[in-house]
Amino acid sequence: MSRIVFVNGAFVPEADAKISIFDRGFLFADGVYEVTPVVNGRLVDYDAHMERLDRSLKELRMAAPCPAAEMRTMHEELVKRNRLGEGIIYMQVTRGVADRQFNFPKDARSSLVGFTQTMALIDNPNARTGVKVVTTPDIRWLRRDIKSVMLLAPVLGKQEAYEKGAAEGWMVEDGFVTEGTSSNAYIVKDNTIITRPLSNRILAGCTRKALFRLAREHGVRIEERAFTPEEALAADEAFLTSASQFVMPIVEIDGQRIGGGQPGPITRRMREFFLQEAQKA
Image (cartoon, rainbow, N blue to C red; front, side):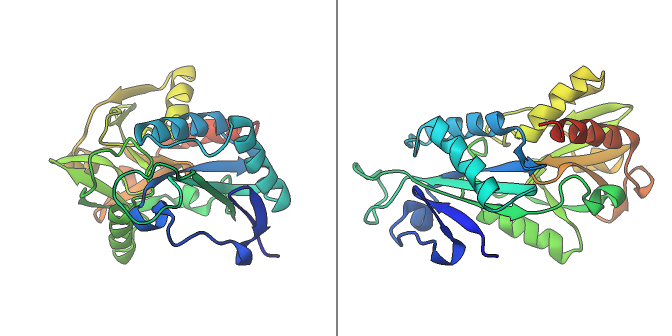
């Protein structure tokens, strides 16, 4: 069955979905996006994702494409029409359609598209074995707090990781790990989770936000500070978080096993806490 997608107010079969070649997302990467998990046919952390979307739009002085109630209806209708039990909804807002010019067009209306992807979030086989990571230079712009569709640098980093047999690349800048190409990065040392503090240099992950809350509720200590690749190699555990992977154990960095080469106890606990909450969403 062909997926039903959303394009500027209409639900259409994916084969019939079209956007203008003059859309500024296509021409300039002048747009933002969000990825919302779906578990048991229900949206997970939806409010957090929409709060971040609103912030990204404001940072780029971009108009919201529709009222908040319509945005939620779009998400719920995509779940319903595609019978999505588990997976994600990707949605993207651009500044709209206008003749190609660098300055903001005066009369363009924001464009909105959305689609579903089916994937295993709860019983992800990688969570049982853990994944491999390699480090790669962070060559991105300095407004990574905006969830922009300008993703060529992360694409290159992810491709490098795949070609080296890894699932993710940890980007390194000025000798410190910033984040993954599509995830936030963490290590565990002496029963403490260590992760970089929020700034313009990393994205404020919604799963990261939920992880912090769950850690407080369950008495797990988190220390916000930058860490080096060398610290990561000496860590007891390592993991990443993202909307499509939740809490994912890391068992190898740059070819060196971490914590004996198997998912660590704190990582497993935090993933279980997150799964329990996601399944109740």
